[in-house]
Amino acid sequence: MDLLAGTGLALLARPIVTFGSLFWAQLSGFSASQLWWFATSNPAGVKLHPQLSTAISMAGLWYIATVRAVCVSLRDVSVPVYNGEEYNVFHGLVLLVGILTAMKGPQVLGRAMGLLTLPITLASAAMYHTARAHLWLTGLLWRFMREDGSAYKLALSCLLFMPVVLTLPTTLWYGVATRIHVRLSRSFIT
Image (cartoon, rainbow, N blue to C red; front, side, top):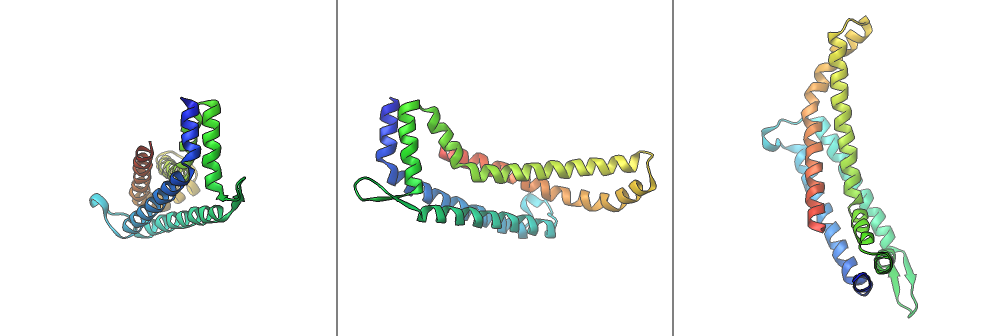
């Protein structure tokens, strides 16, 4: 069965790469439109902080553009094959996954699917850690205001607590939205 799956992957390398590039084009276009919408709207009635929302959206758009540029540069690198045809790097990767699936089994295919979703997984992890850091900072400033500490800690926490609390819904909204986006993308692939 593994040999059949691996051979099928190797023989269908071109359609798989075509589908993958179409999928990533659609996904990156959808992600970019969502980021533009988040930068200027009030999703579900939540009033987002406009400057922070614009900054996070611009960072997301920069990330999408960078991933697209890397994919285009990898697509342009081609390798000559035995019969004179040239395959790009993505065709070679699909062929390699097909050969490894035939030799090692279906777990190789599962790991390859994980690599396919790596760009959105990295974006989600970055937003998750940003939201956790924001929550940690909120708790830290709250503790500084409540405890007996130095005057410097009290002054700093009094100055920063309200801006940090007011920007917290924006960070959490982006964190939840990227988690949902990753889940939907992975469910579409598998």
